[in-house]
Image (spheres, rainbow, N blue to C red):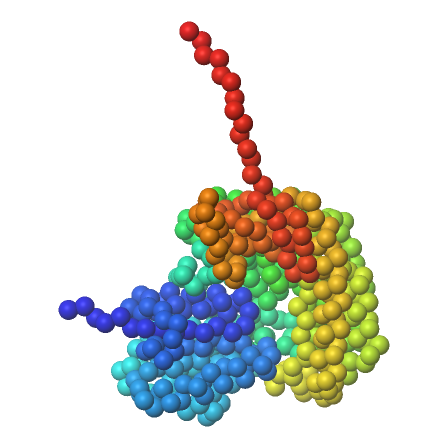
Length: 477
């Protein structure tokens, strides 16, 4: 007799950290006999890995939970769990709003998910495991309660088997007034380099070609062991030496920690993507001060100038929050001016969302109307798209190296001569998206692509092929 396979449905909301967390949870549950399903109704266990950065992300999860109420009534043995940042933030409030939820697990306790599910199945009732709050003990004790886990990987959870995330920094100590991350992810901790390198080597042995190093402020990485300190640039050098890894990216960077040794390393090591994501958030010093970002616009300009000195052709992208507490039209215009000045490759633009428990919610009224937030968001987005499209035109006629990630959303079309032709997509070393026609065999390869068209978000090209002509060989007798 073989045990019946249990079915797992998992839905992930939020950042790359959450994507990685879901990969690790799935890997641990596969060891317990679970297989994935794309139907929450068909699943024995339904998990939501959540985000608390914006209210919309939380509303989406509560709506999804509401849709499962009847399914739980029809099948009381179905286990429903909430994982991640919203679980750490709301804790028992989730049980109050959705009493049919069985499991609440914070980001630091995800390694306990299989055991907790087993206990619930055995009749133990609702289970909750979360980390200590930032004021609930000494730093060392709080750090241990937020300690994440990275022992197992599940390649099927990745967008492609050739790309993977590797966490190098856990938590954050910046305490920006708008941000809930330091509360839900805990104190900033750098992982030991030996663990990171072992994980990267394992990924390379599985055929992974590109890894992205993750941290809330990834370039703040620093690990001390005895008399030895490993800086972020030292870690980059070590990862660069791993055979099989062709590309290395890292996100997200903090402006004040963008040191020259990091820029020099990016310049000199060929595997490192010439792409830096360094959020500015606002072009106004007054807004940056209210945000408690820890730098001024002059500081950011000085950093950006050094990037251009070390890496003249590197792509730089940013994040912005519009409609932060008290933002005037002049302060917003300063942000518009900054985007014009720096000409970011792209920007992730968000309307301010007040988060309970942050200093922003305590200190400042959320006094910008939704209409004004939306209008500013659209104006900034239009400006960024205009700049992105203009700068992408510079790639016309150029040849770029593209790591092929897989098919685009466009359907396969049939070419009678060569078989199925796919519209494929991939990225350049400066993180620009490229779409071109190819075939299944090219997925996972790095190909030369000649660019013939571009818009704000995408480059369009053709694979550069090499033709071998007839050659005359003289055979000696």
